[in-house]
Length: 463
Ligand SMILES: *Cc1c(COP(=O)(O)O)cnc(C)c1O
Image (cartoon, rainbow, N blue to C red; front, side, top):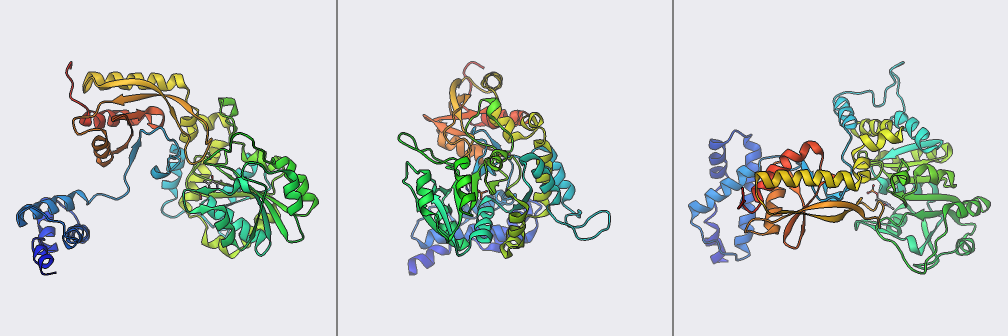
């Protein structure tokens, strides 16, 4: 106790640090004080846990001042995604289209989010988004909420509370830790009835489980895994007549929920939301920031009667989206009206459908630029990119990777420095090399990427 008290005397005071930072750097005093307090507290923690700091009081103060100065930038920063994972949850999933970015900037001050321009009267917030979704997905009605977890929760709470919902044991998914079908079901007040086995579920399993207490059959997209081997599951079009005959609803949690058919681009396995409606689902829920390529949101589409029930539920207000999401989603949906335009203008779709030939060309040009400007330690190799976020879970998208020999500090340290740069760069690491996949790099980011990579590469021997 006495020792640690003595050890703490080495720490500078908040005021000392703030004064030193402000003398070098124009920044609001309150912000500098906040950061200085946090950084001093982290050193106090270390000392209290018995860590020794072999520095003089002056040296430590200099270090804390430097760390405080470096921490003054915004916490959220622009990132160049060189990982090749398109819908990277850590990096904000779908990057927005230029049109969507313009729309959200335009709406940021005042906008007519809930006022109609003709009368100035109150209007439905999501009317513009709904009209586009009706056209694109061929549904009667649509509503938009905070994310797909909320869309599923709201659907179950509004349509199945206190009653039973039947789900195959092969579809009881967990997505990213906090979204688990049994737990979402419990929160909604619906009662989960599991049917079938992990690898096989048959129509007769659903048939046998339907009772007077059944509100719905729910199908869940197995987003982040695939069951292979001796398997079977029942497709929507076979469940639809059963649900109808027994007066149960058919709910489909699609997860990634593409609005554009990507099969013509050689990408099979992600049915569109329109096809779920056609095959007989009553309500389909999906994310806005996966294959839709828009902002974080959850979308529920279906019949007018059921969507009205979702809108009228008390939870709807708790999970509603703001004007920035409505504006950027509307702009994204406008691009999705035309599938050809969508794959060239919506970045997530453009990146996922980029051809192996195009990526090889870009990787070669980037490697040439790196070799001529910064060093010889660059090689090209074939590899795979991933759609990410559970879209096309088993699909390997062929790509060309740049493998870069890091400086003497090694690849892990090089990747750390790249992440901390401005702009921040996220790469992959393999065999102690820094690996860059151009699929997820915007062409206009290449100059910044080259500069960042040069700074961490083994210096050139041959110029
Ligand atoms: C991604 C996913 C979710 C969760 O969606 P969020 O928009 O992240 O809330 C739910 N269900 C499935 C099947 C998913 O793939």
